[in-house]
Image (cartoon, rainbow, N blue to C red):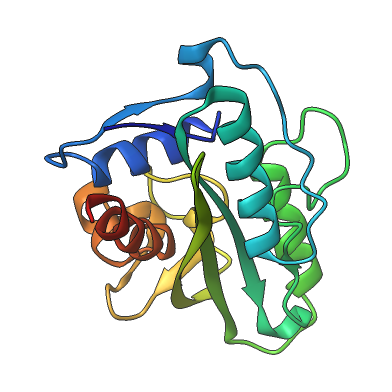
Length: 194
């Protein structure tokens, strides 16, 4: 079976490809098929955005398509940045470092610990089946000192007490045991294998 992974994010590509290692499913990405189409995330939930991406690219490619939508929810910020985690800083050429800096600036006057969670919804769309949704999350807290060379996004300031490390401190095999995306993608893999 060949499936399309609906992302152009290099960090997500590596994580998802690692999760599919040893699984008898061939992965491809939009660029492999000459698809250059950014799906506007207009949904009001992670599930709506994930389904929107999966269904759009499924129609364009004719392949079973897996997409995810992920967000960081910080309790002290009433769940922000949430759905807007990737678009948290509305400026051209924004970097992960810019987003982390804005988050820490907004938290500066809030009482610690800054409890947070990463949430991920994975959607699997197929040409001849209803779209299926799978969820994962990981609990942690935001810290001010960046740590780690792995991961991307907010991983360097997301501390996981059970691991005693940030998400960015965890090499891929360790991250893929506990991360929000790993939990959701593993559920999707079980569905795809059936």
